[in-house]
Image (cartoon, rainbow, N blue to C red; front, side):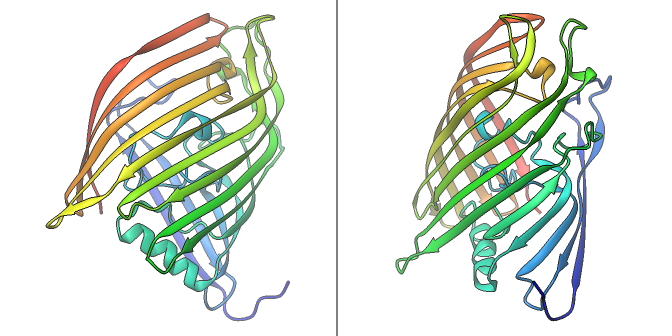
Length: 322
C-alpha cells in the first residue's frame, strides 16, 4: 500500500513519579518510572494512517485504554488487565481511523463522557509481550489486533463496539518464581475480548469479557502450565451536572478465573468483586472519587495453595487533571 503526502512525526515522553506504592523488589516507596516513550509517525496529510513506535499502551480492551482521568473505578478489572498489566509494552503499532472519527474520539474525552482516547478504528501491532519496563526474555513477539467504532445517533447518543485479540509466548522468568521447585519457561499466551460502551448521556453502560489461555500455577503438581481463563465486568453509570459541577455515580461487578502471568509463580486467581461509588468534579481540573468495594479473592501459588482474602473497604482518591 502506498501513502501520499508528507510524513508527520510527534514524540511523546511520560515519566511517572509515585510516592505511595512500591515496585516488586524495591526497598523504597519513592520511585520514578518511564510509562510512555514513543513517536507517532503519520503517513498522510490528514493523519488517518499512523505508526506508533516505542513504549506505549497496547490496544487490547476499552478500559485498559482509558486513563485514570477517564476511568471511573480506581482500578481496572482483573479480567482484562491481567492480560496486559500496566497496559503498556515496547512495540510497533499501526493505527487507522478516518479524520471525522478521530475528531469524535477526541470529543468523547474532552466532553467528559469518559472516552478511551484515539487508538484508531483499526489497530495492528507487534510488541515484546513481557509487560512494561521488563527486558525481552524469549525473542518471541506478541501480535495484537483491535477494531473499535463509536456509532453516533441523531439524538446525540454514542455507542462504541469493539473486538480485540492478541497471541504470543510469555516467558515466566526466574525473578517471578518463589521457589526453585517451580519451573519457568515459555508458555502460550493468547486472548480475545469483546467490548461495549454506551456513553453516559445521562445513563451509561460499559462491559467487556475475554477468554483465552496462558501460564497458570497448578497446585496439584506444583508447576506452571498453560490453562484456560475467562472473565469480565459490567458497569452502570449516570452523569448529571449541577451548575458547573459534574457528578457520576457508578456501580461495577467483575469476575475473573485464570492465571496472572506477570505475578509470582503465574498464580491462579479467582475474583468476585463489586464496586459502588461516585465521582465529583467541582471543576474540570479536579476530581474526587469515593468508592466502596466488596471483594472475594482466592489465589494459589507455591507458597500458599489457599490464599483467600475477602472483605469490604472504602477508598477515596483526589486527582488533579492537566
